[in-house]
Length: 271
Image (cartoon, rainbow, N blue to C red; front, side, top):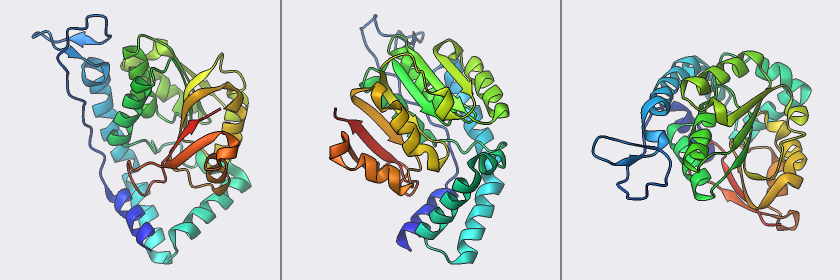
């Protein structure tokens, strides 16, 4: 019940956009732009990216408010445990995951600002140049990751999204943020769209249909660099967790203490 209460508390939290702080530096070779005092600003903190994220987090909160309230009311009324709720969700997906997510075509179901900043920092820290994202939705997480690619000096982000309307909105949002040139957003089933990602992958974000987490990971395993980072957001599917938490499969993995209660898993490829 404690885990369920933590999850409900997380659902109640309103999204609030927040920016990273500028850092004064003399390293002119770094990407980003400078303000009038010569402070080098990272792409995430300035201009079109920061403005886009501020607006999108507000839009996400407005679009998802009723869905979250309905979900909380259903959970509280049922008296079910978190494990039971997750089990029902997984069973629903296994029956027809396309229909499940078609019903959520107007919802962002986006990462929080805190998790988005973590994505940016992690992609910067591992100097990622090729990122793959399963479950692009409206493109909020994609913007955080593409901003990191920009500040890393360039690269490619391949995203995939099942819902056509979300693909169109994600592409428009990336264009508005000035990051479209770094991204390739593919429409369709990830098990098809991610068959060819064009090279070795530095970072993989898995944030789509829960029941596809393990199949998508296994599809991309041959492309993961040694030391590649795999992030599973809402990683509740037992088969996925069993796979990445077993060192014999070539991973080290543990729960991520960012947005606790949302089932975030941090994994590193060791082979």
